[in-house]
Length: 177
Image 1 (cartoon, rainbow, N blue to C red):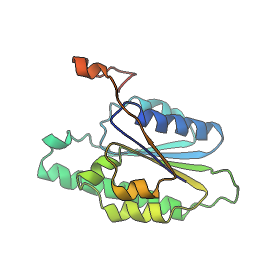
Image 2: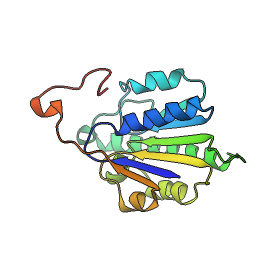
Image 3: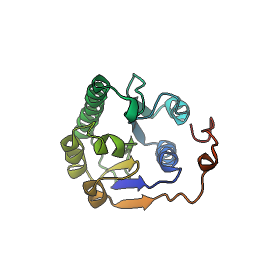
Image 4: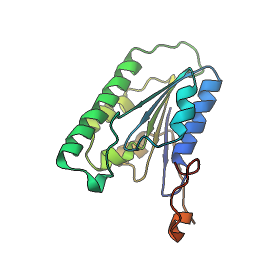
């Protein structure tokens, strides 16, 4: 099954982290791939501490998209494509005969590199179109492309009505980062 959590509200990654902890608690394995976020994302600390959770992300901390050089864009695109290729390989080598999915794959913030052409869309589409029934896949981020919405079994929007950022409050450790 494919899950898509999108919208302008806070909490999309939190949903994916919660699902990851739930799967790990049920004895399943989690591959948590994070795109476009810097290394200061605190949720990764707890996920990395769990034996059956793997975190995959760029080793380099890239600037915000608007501040990227052309070289940054080339480098991050290669990194994103390498992550998707690794996930595709892991899916192809995965086998489970039980009804209960034992593998959860999270593609956190995947919509951004797709929208900004910092990833090969065909790699992601191939994963989504050929996902075995016994693997759960979660995608998060704003403004998903139509093919992401179309393939999702679960599609939820997190809607912002109010956020402290609107009053000039910066992100806070443990809450937004």
